[in-house]
Picture 1: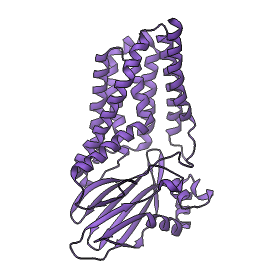
Picture 2: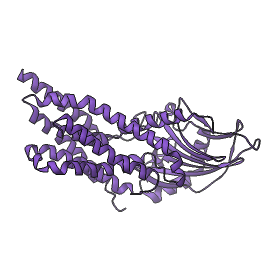
Picture 3: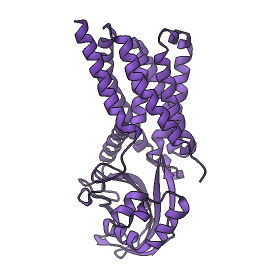
Picture 4: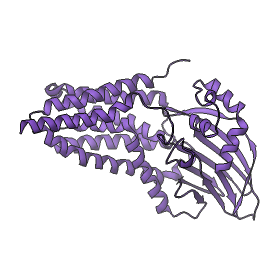
Length: 377
């Protein structure tokens, strides 16, 4: 029996270590090993429509079939130079895959502003501004379609385009993908919109490995179901507060600050687990620490949406749905992992297993922390 217990502990540690091993040196985007979210802000009325697109820089340059010198550029000045140098190829790629229509007829892109670049989380995005001229009846209906970064181009998979629009007096949002590539203004039910953002929230948590590691570290340190409920509740309340405030533009903290602090939060919780019995001395501080770090994680969740315009209050239901998607997924992870950890604690290998799981988490989080600190160029 003890041998089985040790094998169980070793197996669990091996799984955790295997998952984390790939995180320290993530592979660059290549054939179907990366996914991305494009962002589109569409405004206007009638014949005149303006579109601002945020597209992940290196994927855009690769998808437009440009040379490595273009998609491997890291410095802002060089990225801007490459966007200007390859302007025609980039615009041709985008306008063939992103469409604005009016009364069933595609609108023509008439003018294009200068491209820019900016950080979204840890990735650099190219910012493209296009103006569309539409023809049709005065009270026509606009439609927005996106086929950006499709699977068959092999550089990326499962692309989603998050659209925010203020067209003809209606403000709303939608998530477009290969299965639902088009949204028509005023024709999409509210329930469908909420479901889209619920799924987007769930997918964001599952793809946000730093948030998952923080949750796992919390579970490793929780000894009773009550501890899990209280800790998870504190984390949920905290990140919900800052998520909503940041997503609606009330609070604005640069990602260069948020991302390293998120990594630091994982380190602190994982190290507390390694302290073992000394953790009791930190008990009274555990809840405030979790709440404080939850506030920071909420800012990270908000970065996925980046809704910062004054009209964002009108998108409150979408934001709440996104947040509920995060919460439900978080609860599902807890429901699966906590019973396994309870069984593990009843074995003679419990203490060894805590160390085996916590050390890789600390190591990866340390790498993230230093990797996310912006260095002057």
